Image (tube, rainbow over the protein chains, first blue to last red):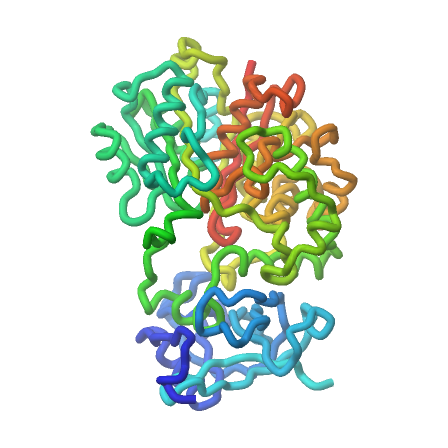
Length: 141
Length: 392
């Protein structure tokens, strides 16, 4: 889809989160990692929100996780979603620990089809030439 | 400050005036500041105090930059102390603790906390409740590309996790909507006064699953104000003082993706502080006024405050326990669900608790109410203020 045709808000990558967005464009999920705490965190900043330590690095994540929770949006609160309601918003708990706010795709927006703790995997949606959004779909069992 | 030191605020101040603006509901012909001013005049009249005696002003409520500057100028006063604490609908409840600290420290004598908000009508005249975010703000980067929507679209995610973890049901949530409507039917100022049933709630349309329309609060225009002074001075005011016996404030996150545990609220922190300061037990409380932006907000707040255990809120509210005649009177004005909710509701919890403790509530009066628990919730279940209020 072209940028002209895309009607939803696009992220404006901040310098402190550029590595994340560059990774998405390569269809890879990269997360900030605190060397002192020995754990991943999200969202990106140049320090760890657990210990306020600034000794951090970026590491690639598996792209796998579970649905911590979800909701089915029946109303478009923004014109970009007018043709898509109902759609699913979710917090995905990555296997590496952090939670991401995202959309669940590849499944009907039906509470009988989606449940908390369901395994999911990342899919990359190239919404414009510049921006790729990570979304998640149920893992086939 | 330790909790013990903070306990020095026990019974140091009292609410001496409380009232709404002249009109609440759909009030398209009045500005937000006009709603503030009407409520301020009414609350000061209620206290028997003059605006010229107010030396501290507290408010989160007004669209745009610096609510207390806008308000002080509009009212025509030059207060020596202002506090624009803005952490959502809980702000006004938290303001009571802040005002208590300022009064106890001798910085001010009379605090005026006001609210005015045109939640229903402001947009129609081109207003916007919240300023745009910095495009580099985390929510703009990591949330808005997936969804744009306010509280009605994020609180359901918390509720969904609660339902999954504890088996909380749609029917249990609906119990709160029905019970709260019964209180509204006893309040002439409430907007929604027709009876509803559990089935009405369950058959109302989805806003965001798992919330039906009738799980969600109203969107109205309204103003409200309370006047606070020292316990000593309160005894000379027009009406019976409503003392602050305990208070607590807590914040845990801003955006829902950073909420540590979606099945509770910061009231699990602010609540125990308030109860400890007041030195009272849950079973001592006569009336409970808790923020009900959604049925779920009230349910999870009862758990977080410790009225029941985590996960037991659904069973706790079943059988119309919180309705008139039930053994747990809650949200006796009809709440944000059925009375009024202009966008930030905390102020109206204070007004109703004050009226109940003074015995001014007519048909909906909880007989012999001496102790009230108030809990405001703000943001995305982000911030809370808990108060224990009491009358002699």
